[in-house]
Length: 98
Image (cartoon, rainbow, N blue to C red):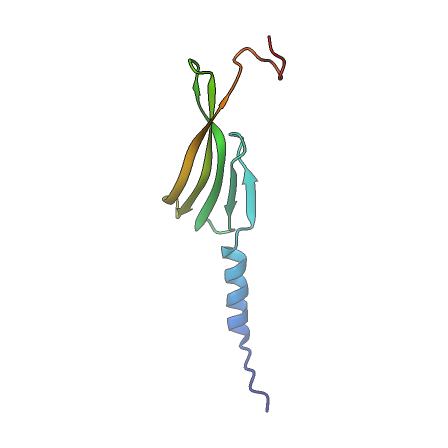
């Protein structure tokens, strides 16, 4: 006798859970490059943040916010973001200095 007992209901539940809980939708926000990963059902959302931040005109520095955010049912449960600074030229057009 074969002792492998495959219940079709259990297999169907596992497949449906995988389809609805694995991150399938990936889209990019127009804020500088933030990527959002979410499953079909909006249970959770993972954001890889890469967005434009503050500008310090006195020191001629531009900020970029980078990190990760995790939300469950729309509530932020984890955030590890930081701002990185780099030099910029306020009067430069497409990389050409004036």
